[in-house]
Each structure stands twice: as C-alpha cells, then as structure tokens.
Image (cartoon, rainbow, N blue to C red; front, side, top):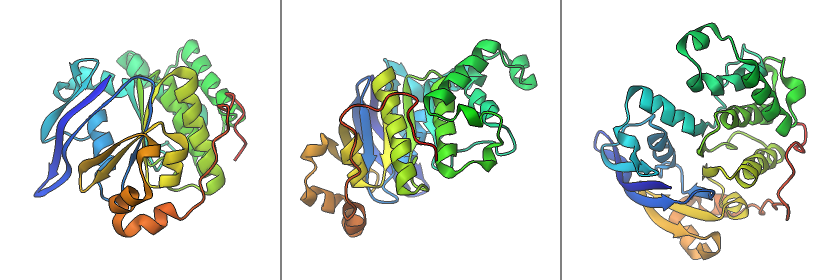
Length: 269
C-alpha cells in the first residue's frame, strides 16, 4: 500500500504540494486530476524520489520512501516506474535498447556500463514490445517513431522494470485522440492483467472518468477531492478546474471497451 502523509513540497515561497494525504491500495487505477499548476507532476515526482519533499512522508508497504538514499533510492525508482509526457527515450538508440534500459537497476554496474544485456532480459523486453504490438519496431531508432509509438515504448520500458506501481505523468498530453486511446488502453491492460497499481496524472476529466476507478483532485497543491468518479459531480468539477472547466469538460468521453483489451491487440500508430 502507498501512503502519503502530510506531503509538502516548497519551491521558495510557493508550495507546489501542500499537506497532501491519501492512501492507494494495491491494484488500483487512480487518476490525479486538476488544472495546470495544481501540483500533480510534483506529487508524482515526489513519490518516485525525483523531488525531495519539504515535509511529510511517503510510505510503501510500511517503508519510508522519503528517507531512502543511494542504492535504496535507485531500487525504489525501479519499483515505482515513471512514464513521462515527453517519453524520455534515447532517440539515437533502437527501440529494444530503450526498453532494456528498464532493466538497468537489476544489473551489476559492469554490465550496465558495457550494456551487455542478458538473454533473459532481451526476451523480457521483446515480450513487452509484443504485448503492445510494436515488436516489429525493435530495431528502429526511437526518434523515427510516431508519438503514440514512442509512448508505447516508454510503457514497455516501465513494464520490464517489473514495478509495484506505475506513475504516469500526463502520458497522453502530446498525443492525438487516436493515440490517446491506444496509450490509455495500454495502461489499463497493465493494471488489469498484471495487477500493477497505476497512478496517472490527467488533465482531461472525461478520460479520468472513463478509465480510472478512483480520482484524487488537486487545487493549489492541496487534495480537495478523493473518491469514485461517479461522486465527482459537474458542480464539484467546475470548482476544481475553475476557469479551465469548459476545456476539460467539453469533449465527449472516450469509451472504454466493456472487456479489457487483450494484450497484443493495440492498433499500429
């Protein structure tokens, strides 16, 4: 279980996250929603250890994540895989190598420096690519792929880390509607088929309602809503998003298939 207790992250006089507290049980698909600048990205980066909190604690299975340093912190980052808005792939490297980067934390230093990948890791990486219908792209340079394909590579990289939780920071912000659905379906499959907890920052309220089984709403760094999507009324949403309400509530919802898509059936982007 992930437990966030009184988490505060200050940058100068501004509190990007202000006394946030909540718990996430294993296997959930939790959407973090709110307007731009609400503190969503800082929250996820704090959980992953990329941002050091000013106050409060983050616990995972009773272990204080905020106290971790060095090797312990690197191991935690492997267990809490990050997926970024801008993919964070190495463009000049091929797709397979980018996915294998997710295995670095499990390798001895000498192997990681020489990038001599064990055959079992190569097989794991190819399996992850096959699950998202992009195994045929394994030898291509990452910078030759479309945005949707790059994000699926990033998700495959996160999957081979064999994480306990995936932290997705606006993973579909730069994608068109078609690729948005492909990527969100991929995250849903990981959540349902592997039981991996997903904590996903989303700007679109329609997407959050369609895919998530729980929503955490943030405003000015504080948690102001925590509950089921059905409990988030339009009135509460308008208060949460303020001037951006028309933008995030105006689009038609993207339907989620009644059955979770089978692994390996994503459309080619």
